[in-house]
Image 1 (cartoon, each protein chain N blue to C red):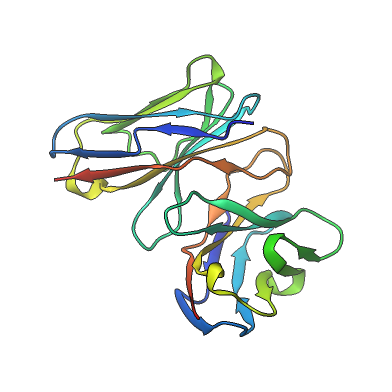
Image 2 (image 1 turned 60 degrees about the vertical axis):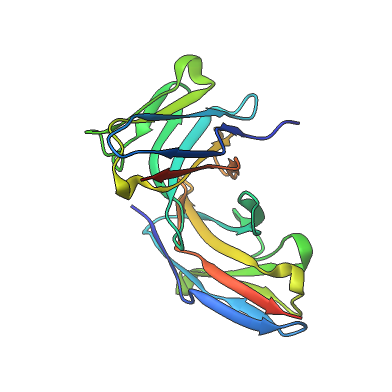
Length: 114
Length: 114
């Protein structure tokens, strides 16, 4: 079974430029998470989807970050414009959507803003 | 909202030493508890999980964790570590009632010297 697939793996951009990350969750998983992980820190939630509905986006900096999950499958996270402080690893995870199940993580996208 | 506290940011052990990593959570209701591991260059993987039942749970690679409800703790243990256990370990929690966001601690970096 294929795991959670993220692309790109690495991205280097100049500040003020836009950037987008893509995530393909495990087939059949209704829950999708985007996390941001800074160096030496744990993952911090940006947004959680149940199917195509964003049910927890309280930590998403909405002035520059946006996300979508069309048809409740793939998801895209966008930053526009990027700032130096956005440099981090962006993780996507999915879960079956039932209670009492763990999340499965992708490899992440390492973003460097210069 | 729930939160997770991991006591040690860095732990250094020699091979064959015993390991215990502390994790405390803060949440007023019933929770699911997880330990994830991130080996160098790899994605987050589930080590073990607790949903209900026996508070002593066993995971992969000889790890175990004990849920102590009165102490809001879920400490990770291994009797004898190996060099290959060098990794970052994250404790995580979500509320059992309904669909709930998975919240992580800041992580503990374990370095095992041969």
